[in-house]
Length: 217
Image (cartoon, rainbow, N blue to C red; front, side):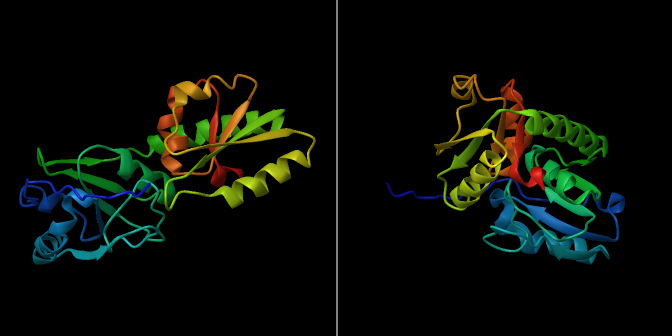
């Protein structure tokens, strides 16, 4: 089945004027597709205020500055994320451990993410790893979505797990229904090979631990 992606643009105009004095003099700018058409305007506002600006450079981008939930970057921050919600900026924080500032264009509020978020995520990963190494049955989640399909990695992981006299099961879907995963009650722990946010945010809906495949490294 063919898939058509239609970009939805926000109608609100991004205006940093009320928060410019609170921003660092050097930052990496990132935003979602809703505001990507305003990147030039955003960058100009910051430069005119004497701020050294670079655009987020990472994986699976359509353009510099564009961020997806699964985008990986080598930028070191500090970051200025433009958008509502914390889904994407939390990924930046967890991945880079750098300062992440969130600007919500709808209410013009500025928020600095607390590093305690990283501590909480790390504790969750450590607990999941303990369960993984003691598990007898491991479920490996594979998405069929373009850009997220990592079946080859899943097969390699399955082989590695089974070499340790454990059982591994590859579960393939387009969009995971975590309620349905509860039907596999014999599985002790799940390993996600798709978008890393599945293992961080969506996994709270499942009583079993969910690790991202990167966590196993």
